[in-house]
Length: 356
Image (tube, rainbow, N blue to C red):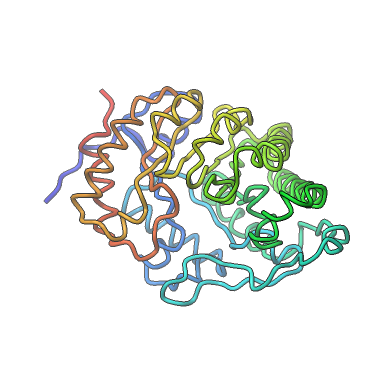
């Protein structure tokens, strides 16, 4: 039987220490679990997106099992699609993992110019996210909302092919859509700040898969993502938000210099996919909490010993990052990952993640 060392801090104390640039006893475990939490406690994957109360319950119980750090979050999936009048399909099949648009909301240039900013108090699935946020407030967690990135929402509205074609041939049209999406994110942030007494408790989450260099070039990141994402973050921070949690998803090594220009908070939380070396990320974001980055596919299909070894490597690369470090999957934890493989990540923290 494995015996873990006695923690010197609670998960809440550990997160608070990192956010206040104070030392911690050991590396935290950022589980990034979403549907894995629902499956682990016996709910269908769709619960993650459709039922905030059960999703919250699943997160809490899964964190209890694995000592996950004191940060949980909710996403209704396909952010922007339902809010701008479209339809999304929730994951119900064996291999489905995330919500996806049924069809593009924007199909023509005319659709772009006629599209209007929705009322974020009532639009789409935002009320579900607010329900989850109120549970976070009631139970003492950081309050979150999942805003998505600029291009993640643009791509959800147009489809990837149209977005990429407009980048090349109709940039003015795409800039109009980026502007609208930025205003959408800013409006959601203002709605959250207006709804809670302590804006410093709000830690928004942005995941940026569409910005990957597997999808777009650094040139197009600089033109279509950087100025809008920077503006959104600057305005969130001006509202009183102190920390922004950003996941730089996929192969984004060539985008890192531009991400480093964006204010993330004091400190921000920055996670990277397994395609970005933690030591490289550390050089670009020395003052922020670094999170990562065990390859999710290996967690699902690899041997426990492989997960343990890769976790050890990540811990040893990230442990002494000046802004603090948390071990995590390199993206969302696969819903059907063997719980024992996930436990091996926690065991690696016990064996290699202690300070002092």
